[in-house]
Length: 141
Image (cartoon, rainbow, N blue to C red; front, top):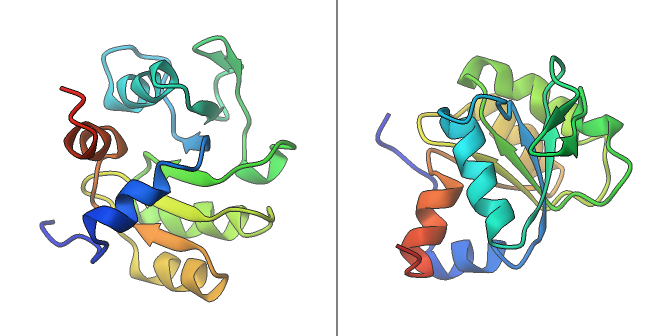
């Protein structure tokens, strides 16, 4: 998949002002992008909240089975799940007030899920890596 959303660099840069990120599909395996990417964000001061129903803790942080289970403020939902699973993630996420952005990692997009997010006033970034974009925009190489 080569298409991506139509956000400008300035719009993407502003998303990084949000600090609370729930990572759906976060992995315990340090070799996987779903572990490396959130770890990078933690190291840059972001509050990462893992969402993984089969782990109790990742990176020393309590995990949750669903976004809607998280009691604290969430600004961004960062999704490391197959495109076919995104609709369920978004349906669950819209139950939680205050979410501003759903970020779908590289290779992930779901048109139906994007529509319900946008209908609920949640911005959608897709087919982009939150770490790669941060590195590119903030020269953190």
